[in-house]
Amino acid sequence: MPHTILLLDSYLAIIRGSVGSKMFRAFFAEIDGKKTEITQKGNLSCAFFVSFILKYFDLIAHGHMTITGLIRDMEASGWKRIKKPKPGCVLVWEAVHDGGNKFYTSGHRHIGFFIGKDKAVSNLSSRGWPAVTHWTFGVKNGKAARRVETMYWNTRLK
Image (tube, rainbow, N blue to C red):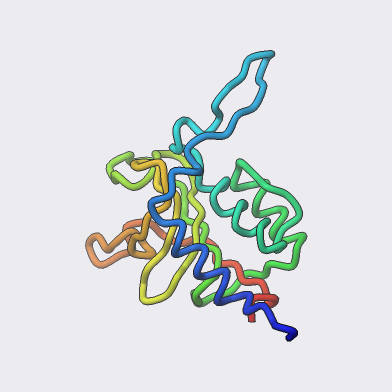
């Protein structure tokens, strides 16, 4: 009997199911002739995590280790900027420079998924694996603790 894959439902299930997975803690490259673990034990794994899921669902062309390369591929693969978050959209958070928040590395942008009800899943540098957080990492003085600079949606997710 033929079946139809429910892309958005499956995609969201994989994102939610990734929480706590340590599979994004290590990725190796040869740099100057030396084997190097380039995620720094998961500290720099947010783009790896997001691109792994997007590539699995054929929503981008390649896997990525940087946010800049991932965004370029997303835009070339039909991802569009949106103004309001919806479950499954990709969030890009601003770079921060205070280093005071345990959830992110100072000076780096961050990328993850909005899963609804003010929640997001991203690979947290403080843990080295995907975790659920408030989609703005909470609120400080009435403002988002970390501003979402861009949200992306792919119409294939329907």
